[in-house]
Length: 176
Image 1 (cartoon, rainbow, N blue to C red):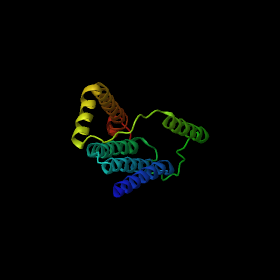
Image 2: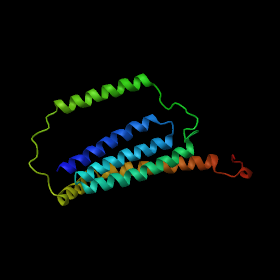
Image 3: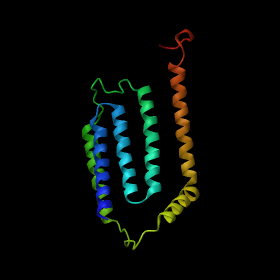
Image 4: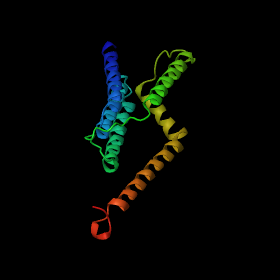
């Protein structure tokens, strides 16, 4: 139990550290990698809490998502490597105020909310996976399918715009 708590704490601190690094780097690609590491650390927390399905799912989804995001950033950003030392933060005061206000609201809601009684024991891994599958495949299926089709459509549209604008050879009227 102590070792499990240590791993949860380690992965939690790693997730927070990499989340801070996301906003401290000049490079969008490094930012995407830091976000990947932060989300992978959350997957590690799930694994340490013996929620294997959620942990592996988190890591697989985030690895794919961040790889795709890094590719699109390299395609569309003027300086994806951050070599120009551009400042990627905007409206700093408003961002700090919004972050502090959001934290106060979240902590307030967490302390005021009635969380109910503490569960005596958690269901086994098989039952947790079955209940999660039921939730995803029954009640939330339409939401997941709609989100998936929307994301796929956006990716195809963005790629089509890029190919139409920049993908043609110079002899066909494209740009070099």
